[in-house]
Image (cartoon, rainbow, N blue to C red):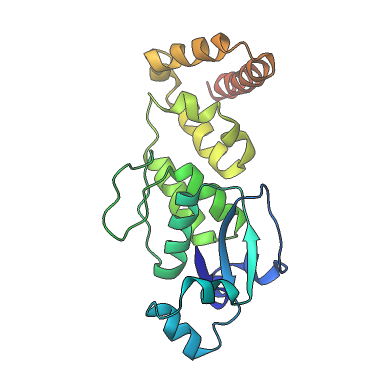
Length: 207
């Protein structure tokens, strides 16, 4: 996936500060930015598909490698260029023509956070807050994602504490713990119950 470095630098401090051939995470190449965008002739030919694949591969580029899912980065890159994004709680299997495949808002937030896209982070946070409900909050609030990203965790914590009376009556709440225990991953079991005890402490303090 190709993108102009001038656009990326204008929208994200991450690309202003990143170094040539920087590698982040695994060895999966997600997209690269050509330093030839200053050449309007080359840019016009690329835009009109007049450059062959072989010629395109010979243009000097800076590669930034990331471990994120292609569809997630495609959504973020689309947002960088268009300032438009459609968020979802699941990954869409049938995207509209010319549009990126819809991806989970948590995945979008994670990439936006890394790339220092503040406005996209805010959009994702608002979406995640608006889609919290008593049935999905248990998996959300007890996830590693909620522990990793403080702003997201706070939104989930507040909702869980506020609606605890209804949450504990849902089948999703009880099923979550059963699934965790069935996996017999002692490290994960300890993490979940440690997190849950912390939430219970918050509920007692609020009562």
